[in-house]
Image 1 (cartoon, rainbow, N blue to C red):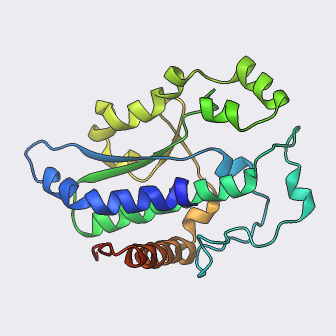
Image 2: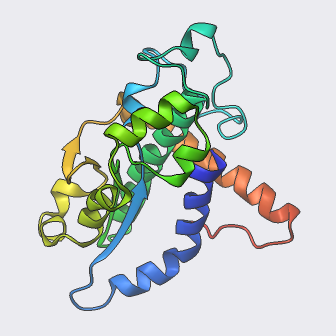
Length: 216
């Protein structure tokens, strides 16, 4: 949750004044592209009890963890795939609420969340067992290929021309709109995640003697 959600949340909120200023320019094309994952759909158990609207949204997002959940698909992953998937669901909810707030302020800033595909990265190779590494080397995309959808979201003319079609959408390779996890339609979870993330980050910033996030 720190790396996949809280970090981008903090960064976007810190640079937002610059983005708002840039959006005032003639023919401005300001976009915020967040990195999600199809795992937030495929790797989260049915009827999962999301905790985004609680005080433990960041610190304990998967409070119950039956042993059956460790076995999803055909292989057992060394890392905790469900916690990863939940953190990526948080990215999608963050993107949705961010777009709503930007729209509310009449700002022509586009937010999109993308799944780059299953990509063979150094991080993946360093954190998995021999079986997963072998599968990845045979079937995963190369990093250059994985960059295609994020680049599409960030630079494609059609995205800006059809603003309403793409804003706050979840994109998969290459540039296709995919239906996200239904949790994105739960306003209680969406708004709860924003509020709890803000509170947790501000607590950490205060502990380090840093200014809190600007209010909306």
